[in-house]
Image (cartoon, rainbow, N blue to C red; front, side, top):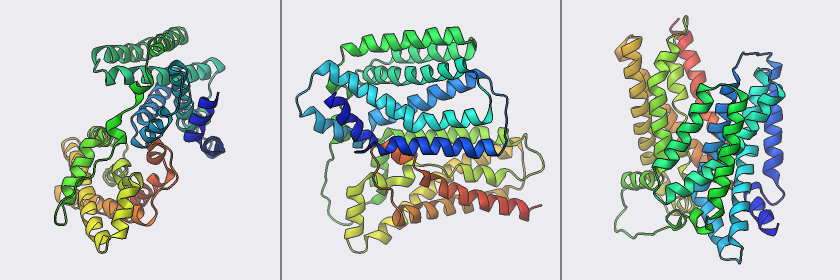
Length: 381
């Protein structure tokens, strides 16, 4: 139990403050949405799919996080029993994913729709399945076993999407948890330790360096950042089709405001305290780094917004020059605000990259962009 307690304090805090914060957020979300008296008809498979995706993504982010690898590296130095360590490690990470990330989602679903007790229990079991299967798939992925994880994931999704009944989903979840537990019995603690993520290489270069090269290498070394950007690009393709069904409003700027939510790229200094200290300590580096960081975010926002613009023109048409200027305005404004916020108010005290990327600060820039979009919609009426 000492290992379980040590791992829990590493993720939840010395006094388990993350649990109380997550419970408070869940209560606030439930009360706020329920107070709005919004009631929707949502099919149970939607709740189950949301539980699987949120829990699995949070679990995977924690397993692959660099800050977490540093914690694991320190704990592996101590004497431990291999099977107990793996069991406690997966259990604590799963609890962290369910309590801090999935619980607010369940609160939101509970506030907007009525669910039966079997539906909620199935959602809980789906979340547990997602965490255990993610740990097993992560180990397979580290060993370059690609086909089986893909087939396993596809099978789970097929059951959730095609059967739409509780019994098959429960059976699939229980069998998947059992299979993952059997597979992880033979796992070694070092199967979850990524030395490349924990180690930091320092390279000395003459001159001032090239921040663009650094940012590109940073993206290549942190594949989650690329995945998030690729997800935004895919979302930008479907947004014009979604907004096409909302008449009476100029929805084009609203889509641009949503696409500013590229959290990993907007927390570059928060996720790397060493880089932040170096930039703040060296004279003249803040402006030099800030300008290039802003241009980098502007370029990324421009690419994502450009995809959205192309889709909008194909499906909905409109003034190309006006929309192009709006894209530049939102991409530049989002980049400038993100850099200012990151420099003035960096995120402190986070335990894992998942905590960093789900910090409430991420919604400030999109909220400002939404207000700007509402103003533009009012101006164009």
